[in-house]
Length: 98
Image (cartoon, rainbow, N blue to C red; front, side, top):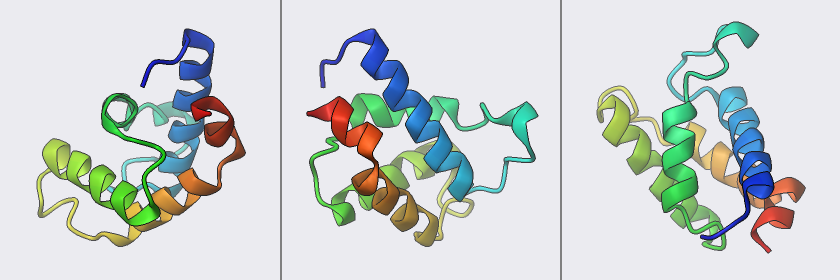
């Protein structure tokens, strides 16, 4: 996906908000460590087709987290379902990828 830097920043910030709220691994303890998932977010931006359906997005994001954290740590798929749902509902993301 080719997007300009301003849109990429908006996409990154929106994904950071969504993923930090879901906190699938349990790493977020306030504003001071809101960058804990930044490597995964960058990977999501580079690999994810945001036009895919919710199930495909869930699977893709779950696999990225398994790559970074191990299957035992990232095994519960529920947080990734919530992340995918919020991605599909996000006006910011929909505006950026169109």
